[in-house]
Length: 334
Ligand code: KG4
Ligand code: ZN
Image: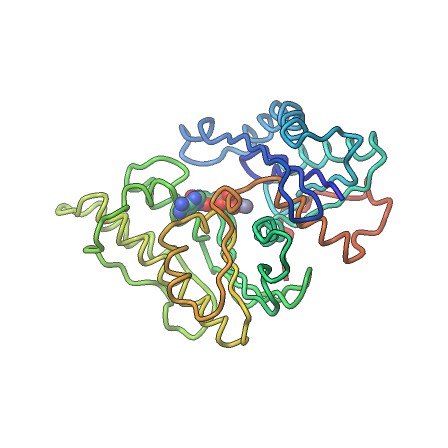
């Protein structure tokens, strides 16, 4: 079964084609990052307009790279939330038009579930490579930071979440404070690479017994140190900040694994592209750790197509929902 997945929840116009939920045929991502960089963050109206411009060329490229014609598709999948309302609507309306014109089912996908299923694109055909349940999910993106327990395909329990900023937001705001570019995560990682941690920051809520997070205090601590008269060099501040974020993410994920006797840990979302986080999770976790390659951690359409395959296998969604599928900007998982 070939599914075309469309992702426009934020600032990437992305379309991918996936066969049977696991085989990546193409993944084309058009990032708007240059467009928003001058504002230091995403401007929703600019994002929506850019999605409109990019959609058709990206669609054509995704089919071409996959070596597939539109008539060879079996379903259209699209992110229906969470995300920016205007951006979601562009993808959703394009998807509805396609589904109606091609006579195909439309599957509305939760973006966060897409980040989870990015891992199945790595798993290959061998079931032994695939994560077993129960599986702890550390979901770290620009919009979300959550720990979930995935009990089986499509069934999630929310175990903990951030009380303020997401981990991605923390990276983005820290980078801005340090005069680095946007998005901040890759920039912090770049300047911190190979720099020893001499500037120590306290990881927030590290030992509070919950699986929740809070990053706004850490951001303020960085701000004070970055503005101090005797400020440490930017690479030292970036390295210390990155370490504090990664330490608390990994500690809480491991705690969740232990408390739930999980068979594995899956790390997903844009921040899962972070090299230190990947390394520390793998080094410290006693059960198998699954992290998609960095290009599949950040937003892409193939993860939406992969998630849709498993939804269809589970008998979701009911047929004839094309015109009823709506954008849900605050959609939740678990
Ligand atoms: O999942 P994603 O692509 O978009 C959302 O769904 O929000 O995540 C984007 C976030 C941004 O905040 C970005 O700074 C962060 O992921 N990010 C990283 C890295 N690459 C992207 N954070 C830390 N290290 C990275 N290498
Ligand atoms: Zn995302």
